[in-house]
Structure formats: C-alpha cells, structure tokens
Image (cartoon, rainbow, N blue to C red; front, side):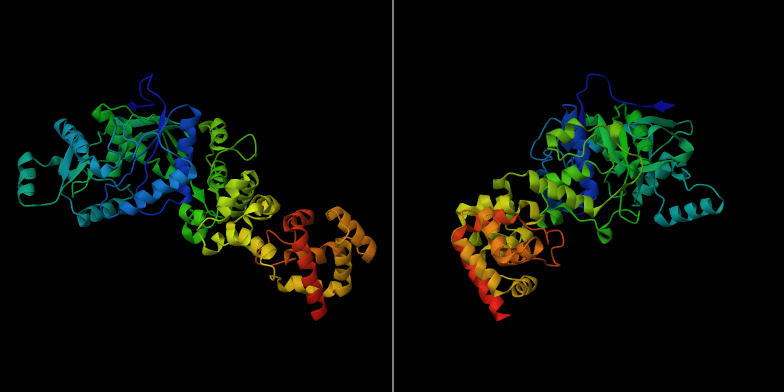
Length: 496
C-alpha cells in the first residue's frame, strides 16, 4: 500500500496557486489563491505562483498577465514565481518541457509507463461496453500488452500515441486530507491513465504533481473537484521517488440556488469587481470567510486574516456565495479606509464620471467630503452622485423638488432669516424650529432636499433616505453655499 502524508521533516512551509490562464480570474479561483496565501503567511512560509499553460489551445498570454495583475491588486503577492525567479523556475509550465521529458523517460525505463495508440472512437466504444456491463469505465490496458516490435511498427506508420501510467493491480493510495480526513483509493478505481498527450504535452495529473514536488510545495489547497486526481498524482510521485505535499480539498463555491457558481449565477471576475469599485480588502475579507470560519466578524487586514487562518477552520459543506455579504464587507472596507485612500478610489479612472469628482469638489474640501459621505457610499459611482448633488449647485431630483414645494416659500424664507444669526448647524436648527414650529421629518426632510438636492432615489436604495448627517453637509458646504442653496429652494418652492 502506498501512503504518502508529507515530505521529510525540516522542509520550510510552502503553498502555491497554480491557475490555468484560460480566462479572467474569477471568485472561486481568487478564493483558492487567498487561502494558500493566508496559510503561507500564517506559518511564516512562502507562497508560490505557477502558471499552468501547457495546453496551448487554451492558454492565453493576456490572461496570464491579467491574473497576475489581479493578484497584486488583491495584495496576494507571491514570494516565488513569475518576476520573482528562484531555483525552482521557470514558473510557466510551457517552459518546463525538458523537465517533464526527463521524468517521462524515467517512468518508461522502469516499465511504469507505456505508449497507447487507441483512438478516441475506440476508447469511447470500450467505455460504453463497460458501462453496459455494469462496470465502471476504466482503460483495459490493451496497449500495455503490445510488444516492442508492435510499438515501433505503429510509430513508424505515424500513428499518434499518448503515454499512459501503469497502475499496478496491487496499488493503493492513501493520504490524510487536512479538511476531509483519511482518504483511500484502490487500483481498480483508478486504472491506467494518460500522463502525456499525443501532441507531446503533459497531462494535468503529471505536470501538476511533478512541479509540486520539485518546487518543494508542502501543502496543496485546492477545490474538492480535484480530490479524485490526488491518488493518481501520489502514485506518480511514488513511482518517481519524489516527495508528495499534504493536501487540503476545500468545499466548492455555489450560487444562491446551490449550483456551481458561474457568470450566469452572479459570479463576477476580479477584474469586473475592481472596475465596479470594490476594494481589495472587501473581497479578501469576504472570501476568507467563504468556507472558513473566524472567531470574530471584525474587518481585518491581510495580516490579521492570516493570523486567524487555518485548515482546521475550513468547512466541508459547499460555500454559498452571497452578494449581500459581499456588499457588507465593501461597506466595512470603505469605513476603515483612510480619507486619502478613499479619495483616490473615488476619483479612479474606471468610469469617466469618477474623475469628474475632483472637478466638482474643491481640492481643499476633498478630505471633508470623504468623511461626510463615507458612511453612505459603496461604489465610486455613488460618490460621484454625492459630489454632483452637493457641488453641482443646480442638481435637484424630482423627489427633492416635491418636498421643497410642499414645505413652501415661507419655510425656506425663515431658514434664510435664521441663517443670518446662526453660528453653527445646531443654532440654525434650534432657531428654525422656533420660527416654523416644524419638528422631525417635517423639519429635516425639506432641509435635506434643499442642501443635498435629494431625499430619495430608487437608484440608490442602499443610501437613501439615510444620507450624510445634515451638520456634516452644513460644514462641508460652508455659509455661502448654504445660503445659495436656500435661495434656490425659495425659488423652487415659489415655482410650485
């Protein structure tokens, strides 16, 4: 029986993220990268990035560069990998062909791998026959019985051949999964499998396992959909005399309906979330809790997320993606960011309108503007909306105009009178209450409509009707702008 738990003692702790660059980084893969990163940091170890681009038909260079940019933006900076070359490079599998060739030859020399000339049609017939007989579909091993002469004849004739790993009938592979406990597989459940395609490129089972070993990975954290791959990889490493890492197979991320998360079911790429105004720490705080538990629901830095992270806190049940929770952590990220960070975020050039905030909000008021609206924004677009409402001067939505018209000219005329002697908002409010006998909503809603240009907008249900505190709006606008706003309210009320 082959049981491999971990490599020899004394090897430093190292995790890895090994994506295939076939598309933009999505949330499921981002979570896998984050889990590996946090585990490496929690153990004082290393985090390695490897690009698995051996399938030339699917690999796209632009996706490889894009996912590296996304990882850096999230703060998941690797210690070893592209741009941080180490002794285990290169870190693109497409550049590691000579390494794989050496191990292919070694398996063939030991009689543990053989060429297979079976066509796809022949394999499909074999599979259907086995299923019809009530047997699990496994390769019969018929090409393993070819003589060397027969093999050479087929090669001379130009017949394409894959390379299969021979699984001995007596083979068994067991390992301790850090999330799912002891796992055990028998040879009859595996069968001989392809390790090199007919075009000469290595199959995932092979290149992924070999690279983990020679790159000295000590723990592989990946989705549970890879669980069935692990015994094959353990058998390969055992046959080559290479050390195997430990494994932790995490629960898959599913949508609200319980089906695998996909673009059609609400999943967005990291690039889309970034362009939509999400902050990197918001995404990290959410994903770190998606299939993993913390003792606290506090908003945490990457350092603190790592300190509380461990495989013993990972869940076996599917992790359900919740857009509401994502928005909660976005709100927390906005709340905890510095004013300078938020100003850069609000004016980022991801939408042409965002950059215009800097044109609307006076530079000497940018910090005060951020503090005034930070509790009422979750995206830069919402910040733009506030900038337009507070500083465009003539921006009053329909609901605001209705409230202003209902309050009437007399109310705002009294407001202008009270403004002449008010030292601050509290004094102004007290004076206006006495002058108009208005209280509660009948006092504050007209003022909010006049000073901010809005009282409710169905486009922003997360903001309204709770906007920035009126005293903050008062201080932000200053006496002259407040006066101009109240005069405009008198005009609008009269027009009604």
